[in-house]
Image (cartoon, rainbow, N blue to C red; front, top):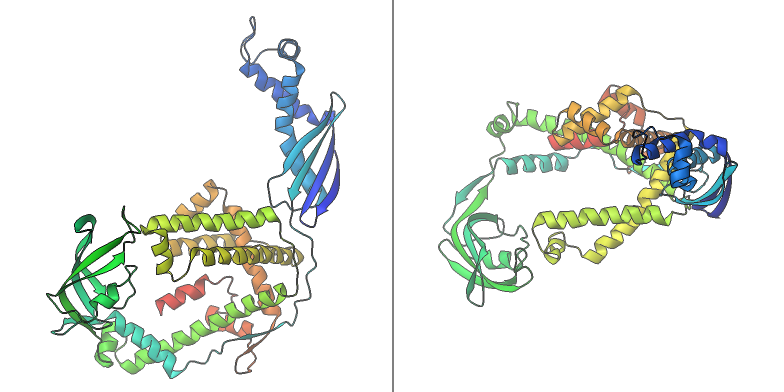
Length: 459
């Protein structure tokens, strides 16, 4: 087999592949067997029709077509390996010549990962947040903890922002009650930002046993997008009462006996989180610094695939929310146009990041050990709330283990960038990432961001 490469653009090539007929022999033998199973010839059992009879009765073209259907995809894969290109799209293949008994020729046009050189990333200067824990940081965590243990107490006054109300809701259009647009005994925090526009403004100042109506656009159901009168009947008004900050609260909210012990624990955990943040920031900022130095052309098909996948996920989220499209975007304080623009820029960056990290993986000869793959699966299973063996089977059954390994080695490439950088914090202090590894992991390098996220949740 002989392969020639023609560069059509920095992101697209045309392969011209010449294959001697002898190399088609295994596929041709398989083609004869397949055709023999499909045809019926008097005097021969199914699958036992000789090759010469098949050619006499049905023509050699039938066998050649079946041969090429089997052989060309495999030969294309071999050609790609030979010329060392990395396809990022499905190829457009055309058989251009068939010299029966001599050779065949086919062409394959395909989008590829572009060639580019990596700048030297040793000593890149990046700045990360300080790991210093302030009293305000501790107070913020304490306040969040108090919010979790807050109680609601009924009040004999109009509702204010931050109060909770229990209410009945119903909607009418032209005086006709909309059956699916009503709910009873709904608990709601005033000022929380309902997708039902006007609800917060209507509730503020209402007292128990009071009724009020306001006009708004319905956000779900068959009448989504139509203007309706929404009638609120407030049943009760309650205010949130936070527990006192004392030893009793420490015993209620933690395993500690005193408030000082709780504060010390929060301070320690906050420092740990900030150290992990420094690691994550160092890696991400070192990567961004490298990306800023490289202009990489992006394959149109790969970019379109990435954008389309994000749009598909968005459509799924909107459908799952039960909201109208307009209400969904209002809820997230954005517009469809803004979200699509984000998809374009984020998709372009994601492709560029993948190309750069894969280049580092190759140049640094990074790999994945069996233990690293096991650790990855266990960690992801914990995040998803499933058993590790279930996730491992799912990945194997759906051919996703390769994707998992790509994610692992790309995280390793980020680690390489972070470790190669000169890192300082916003106070001008040098940050030693290896010292951080020793403090938070007993010297073991943090391979991805998941541990950091999990530990922050626990705090």
